[in-house]
Length: 313
Ligand SMILES: *[C@@H]1O[C@H](CO)[C@@H](O)[C@H](O)[C@H]1NC(C)=O
Image (cartoon, rainbow, N blue to C red; front, side, top):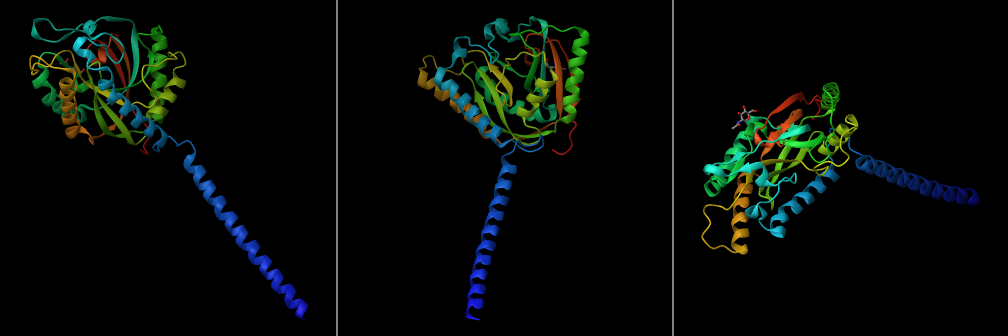
């Protein structure tokens, strides 16, 4: 009897240990699976956390650019597309006029478009802050044409000529991509002034298809496109204005410290008014730019506009 009860106690202990171990194993397995599902590549409708972090780091770096390189635009800088500003604007007769140059072959750009209803309040704020200091030495982005450059089928650095038939095929491929992309809810992370004088809005994604995914889809859809694209994969930016020269409110003599403090204050004002501004992007455009930087300079262009088709944003 004692032996049987001994055997039972022993077995009971073993059973309890086995039960606890399997329970532990099972919960660890579940945790591992849960984490794996969180780490797996997000589907097109969820926010890409990794891209979000890289964007924040990129924007910090862009914001440091002015301090690191100084205000190059006071000595005629280059644009974000490495075109010299003196080549694209003339400051004659007291007004700023873009110098439109035919793009041959036309540039074929894919951009997300921000509706004028949403861009207008931004453009008004930017104008109110910068115009008093840069009257006649500033170019404002047309608020009907606020756009986020995604992917080029052809650009001025690596031109990819295309026939009318090939262009139609490209546009149809982009239309098919647009159907799979979810509208993006975005928030203006920060306003940045680059050393070349471009006032940029740098945005974060709250929901919808991440720009990284959109660019990957466009790359697949446009196999002839230039390998080297103009912008970082994670970037979601729109240009607001281009400063072309010395502020007219400067005192006669300024040193570098004054200069940077002056621009920092303007950028801070812009950020105070605009960071946190939320918008929704619902259109992808395939744009043939017949003039260099037509989207930026009100040049000649043909835009095919596609609604983003995925509904679970
Ligand atoms: C801004 O863009 C719209 C739409 O293309 C156009 O109708 C308008 O003339 C442009 N404004 C200027 C000042 O060029």
